[in-house]
Length: 259
Length: 310
Image 1 (cartoon, rainbow over the protein chains, first blue to last red):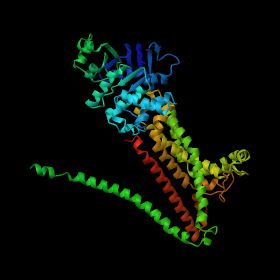
Image 2: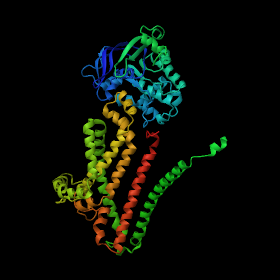
Image 3: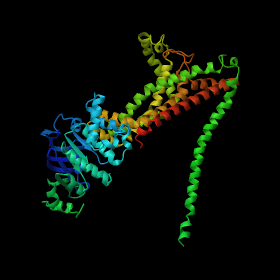
Image 4: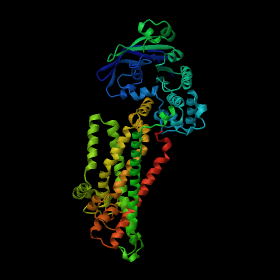
């Protein structure tokens, strides 16, 4: 249950403003791909086009193709709701539903897709998803308590549990650790390593060490200046990007000379 | 040297602090004093009616017999208003906050707010001159087809000046309050939670059910209670629209009366014990409103843990 993503000639617009220009990238199934780059270079925007979440912002649109195992996400008749149920997302700030218990948070997506689920099945799924997010042991005694009572790191793992409970093909993570302390960050990074056995993971990060630690491949995005569109500068195996990049801009960025 | 510089303080800043805290304390106390003053006034003025011998009270059977049909009438009119207004208000608020294009939304919100600015006597006039007349064929239909239900028992009022008409007019009056408060609450739903729902593959309506409505729940309850407060206390519209009478189960016959309208209609010609009786009726209304608000508070605090405020 994991699929590859191929992006062909993708342009992202906010109304008339071209935010990301001409991205071509092939993301392997069951791998971790990291997007790095300075702020405002369009990496988060691009990530959100991979499950059509950019459409939440009025006026946002794309040109080009995003193929999930060959099926175009932007093809005619494709429902963004279906796309998002197959390509899950974890956000920058942990966002468990405050009005739901931990258990209901995990089941939130499942209940949308399949309204009839027996209590037994639900119990199994809750345990499996929380185990999968390395959170089970910490919350198994308080599944009925609100998710907002957990620590930031636990909340983020709860969000990951919620995302994997619907068994998506791909999991997108938009700076999932930027609001977390180092210990919680480590827990999430360990989890990402385990997730790639089953899922295709794409992660946006500001932290280059994190990209180096967790990803198989790294894509470097950059922006020529304010008001210019973001571009994919270089994409390759993570060790190559960090030790022997082809582009000068990539080398400058990963060696800390700017950004 | 260091100790003196630490113990020295900017005098002016502290004066401002003290003035401000005294002012807020005074404002807070004033509310309590006013509330207490009103309650005290009502109790003192109502006392003669409460202790008077039953045959002296209007109707001749004591204050309780006099007041309880009015209490029921008030509650019926208010409940009708809320049953009609709440779903419409929530629907309109959701449309404005989450479905309508931005331009239409602000225009519509403005119109809704304008509804709240119309004086209640105008609503009353509209109710009696237009609505009552237009709606009486519907009452006839209800009496003929659903007359087996006690609340729609015929014969329907020929003028249409019934408690149901009063309830509908009240619904229109409380609609803007509930709508604009709900809209404000819905707009405050954190984007983060809405996106979380959408990213799980929720449709727009599912997203609203998962995040906007649960988040807005306490706010909706407060809005409905404010609406109820207005419906309970509304005088002019009911006094104009309702052809009052004894308590009847049927909503489409003339009859029933609310406390507020009863006071307004009788007060000008009242004297002596009659005044006390009407003030006692006011006291009962005061207690009902207070009770309703306390229940609403209770509902809101019981769900605090899951409110999204933490």
